[in-house]
Structure formats: C-alpha cells, structure tokens
Length: 235
Image (cartoon, rainbow, N blue to C red; front, top):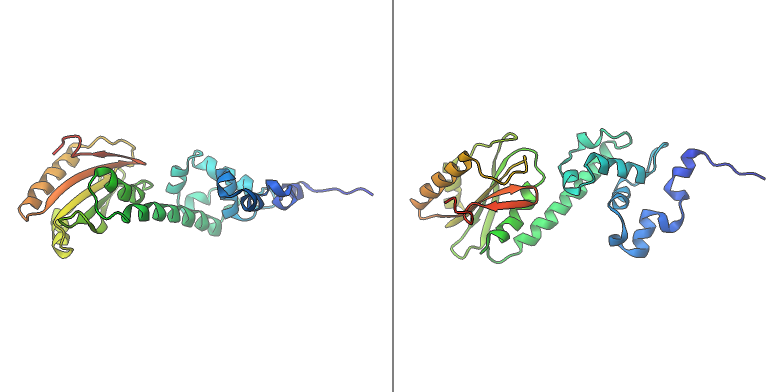
C-alpha cells in the first residue's frame, strides 16, 4: 500500500514533527527559545494552501527588513501586501506590536520621579519610535518631577510639525505642572536638531519662564535612540 502527500499537506505545520511546531516548541521550551518568525507564526495562526504560517511569518519579517522596529512601523494595509496576510492577520500583528509598546511605556511610567533625560526617554521612545511622521510630545511634571500627564499635542508631515506654545502653557496650568519636558521624533533617523527645533526650544523656554514654569529638556527621538538638547548645550 502506498501513501502520497500533496505539496500543500507537507507544508502544513500540523505535519511537522512536534518539536518543530511553534506552539508546541513554546510549551516545551518557553517563548525565549522561539525565533522571531516562529513567534510571528503563532500570531498568524494558520497558513494558506501554498504557504505555512511560518512561511508567511518569514515574508512579513522580510517586508520589515528583518527588523522588529521596522515591523512596528507597518500598518494593516502595508502588511496586506503579502499574499495570505488578510485584514484579520494584519490586525493581530499590529495589536501585538502595540502591546509591546505599551508594556515598554508602562515600565517608564512606574517611576516615582524623572530626574534624568534617560528616564524621560524611557517614557517617550515607545510613544514615538515607530511613527513615520513627526509628532510632538509633552511630559508635564510637578515640583518634585513626578509625572502628572504625558500628551501628544501635535503631528505633522515627514519632516516637520506645528507646535502651539500657548496650548502647552495653557495645559501646564490645567494640570498644575511646574516643569515640562518636550520631545519630538525625526522619522529620518537623524538625531541632529534643526534650526527650527532650536528656535522653538528657546521660545518655549523663555515663554514658560514668564509663568514660572521650567523647561527641563527637549529630546529628539530617532528610532530607539535620542538626543538631549539640554545635555548637548543647545539651551
């Protein structure tokens, strides 16, 4: 008696040996033992007639240049460029990436006070690092530098954003904030502040001082890295 298997059957994960299946491997060895593609395959859940979930996962990673940070910047529509990744699978991937960002953000938010630019960056980077357009963020602090609120107040294009200084100062009064840290991202990946970045920083610092509010720092976010304009002596 002879048995034959089609190409589609051989590609199915259920036909792999148990220790090669992502879900079983995770149960046996823990999540840390899985590759990025295997973790992504679990999210994708099932394959198509032509491709296994792991094949699809590898294509998704290739679309993101095999970089998880780049994967976090992809939206549902972009993920659907891959045949086999429909809306539901794209949503699942984007939701997982958002959960990762929120976990990273929550770790920074647990701090009692923000005394270093690195501590501020830990809060701001998850908010801005994956965006493809410029967004401006403000951390509102009290005298003890405890974080009262964080807020994204404006967004713009790929190379610039418009910031309303009056709105920032109005919100300082609303939240009873005595100190602020501002930040915005550079989607280009360059941490170098532009002339307009420097001008805005000086204008906001001087305006805030008139209201007895201190501008502590202005951070430039470029991916997972940052530049502190205060540490670099720009103001």
